[in-house]
Image 1 (tube, one colour):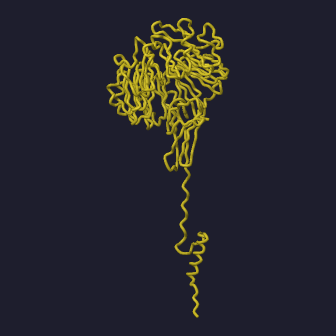
Image 2 (tube, rainbow, N blue to C red; image 1 turned 120 degrees about the horizontal axis):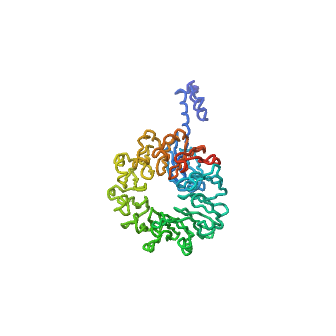
Image 3 (cartoon, one colour; image 1 turned 45 degrees about the horizontal axis):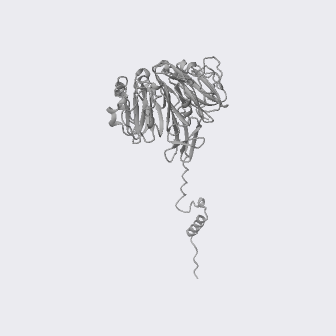
Length: 547
């Protein structure tokens, strides 16, 4: 009988198969085919960081650094209450009174930066900072600053409203304190020298005007204090003047107010039902008799120096104002309008289709005539203004500008070919600065107020935000440094920039002050000391940007 026995090689093969079957792959070396290939190391994990730049209430820009992402990192913005504000690297801050968060996401990695609610306010020539219910101001005392060496702060403040002439602070008791040219001696019982139409008690909200404040009380009633200026009389009339101030019938009609617009001497209150109540100087917009039937279903009211313009829900536009000037009153029929931008004397109506048309008295104001560039005004996203001209940003990043030809045209012709890939535009009184997506800046207009940036052009790289007053620009870069140009005495001097590092936000007063806030809460001021660019009260030690 022949008995077959397995060969040595067959025995080894059977052992290897058995080992593999129970998972002992590490013992299979020598089973043929050599050692198994080592497993590839896992990929490095994704990482992401975020840093936000920009003043609260302005454009906010996120700088994101990421590695090992499976796709381009995304950024989402929302309030602390969960209200979505948008996505992308930049947003317009529409909720400055709220804490907001910016969150960058890279695959499974996230990073969040929380921004404090706005603490900085500005009048024409003063700054105010609200911290933990305490309000401190500095700058020209006529405009709301404080002239004493050791100013006394205002405490228990729940709301701050800035006007051109100063600040109004709502106290937690429902009373009001004002700082600046419209001060009230006794808000609970206005004295003869005060201008309030009734006691400032049980107040729930304050609305600013050009030379006045308006308070909504908890019972829905309305009170006002301040002045309106007569164009022809050149006299200031107090709101509580028994003959020419706010009448009892007008006060009674001022209920459910959404907003109030101003000219130099009149006010137009938009009510929640879409109607408008105007009051003040009849020579600058208080007389609405001719257009009253059209002032229904109004969604927005705006004022120039002498005229008012109202946008209606159906996209039509209504204008009224000075019988002597009337510069911004539309001469043509405007329809399909979704947004209006005004300079001092004219306007631009942008439609939902992205077209734009200037309006006003083109015989006296060249910015009211956009016919020379009308074929270019398509796919318009935003219109910007100086006091006398306009610049339209198109969806492709190009810019179309017109108006104030003697002051603007020569420099505009020089830089027009560079006005591409633009992200946003800032303006002084008579100059523009366009921030491009690559972080460079293009300027045009009056060179004395920032229209010529050639002297600092080499420094204008990696710019993330531009802030302006009437006379100078300040550009914030991604590394936290600041570049300034324009009128030196109003903040355009480059002498201050060496001390400005790690800056995250820049604020300005129109009359020439700048305030820079660093990431750690330290800060610096420069510019005109009588416009907020001088000494800050010692009680303000930090201005918190992030939480």
